[in-house]
Image 1 (cartoon, rainbow, N blue to C red):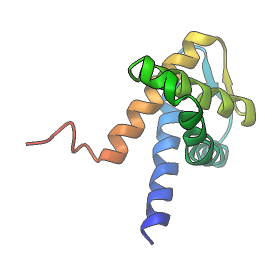
Image 2 (image 1 turned 120 degrees about the horizontal axis):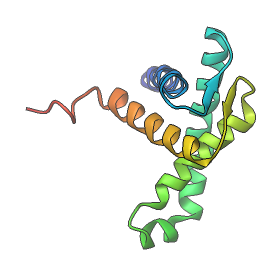
Image 3 (image 1 turned 135 degrees about the horizontal axis):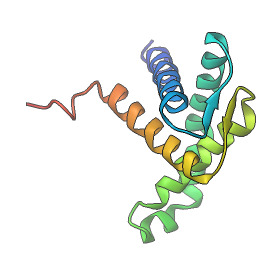
Length: 121
């Protein structure tokens, strides 16, 4: 049951993050309804569960050499894959792609940590 709860929480946080990216970043648009948002969030969750760990494994030496900065490129690649596989999402250019990946990562961090890191006493 813990796995299903984490999976549902990941889909919810990804849907919030995708909506926030489409709302606040110029060059990122989402033309779909609530169901399309859920499907896009599920696609992003699957990308983060299966493809992202493989990319981290393959590019492990590069991540070490750049002291972790290459993780930003991996995050941007996952958002690009989401743009490629999900029709309602359209990202125009590299700067909106990078900004969307930063925003999606930040929202996922805040939602999954439950605010514990930001509000630790």
